[in-house]
Image: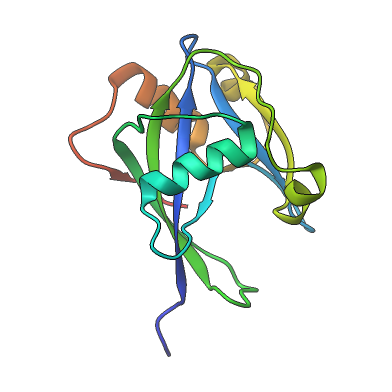
Length: 158
């Protein structure tokens, strides 16, 4: 069996001064998942450059400083055409509260399966029955907010 074809991706854990997190709702044909903004790296793009591009496209957010990488995750999917999954690096991005206004059109966002973008409080996350990626996102975010970033990125699993 050959090794899976994995796409490199960068994701942003965008936290505001109230410790709210900005999440994207991805509407897949068979399920809906809330995840952090981000996506695959373009050719010759660094993880940090991808974060800046994705945040501008998905949220209209311009960031100069990308914080440290705090999590990693490898996710495989069964129906891959170009890719069998992706290897994600999650970066902490601290911002002042703002209202997301994507630069991409609704049609462009829909092509990327982006259905919604909104802030979540820690309480909303803890009380939610929504599906998240990573699956333990509410718990992982609570720990990140309480303890801060560790000395090295942590593998957070699926």
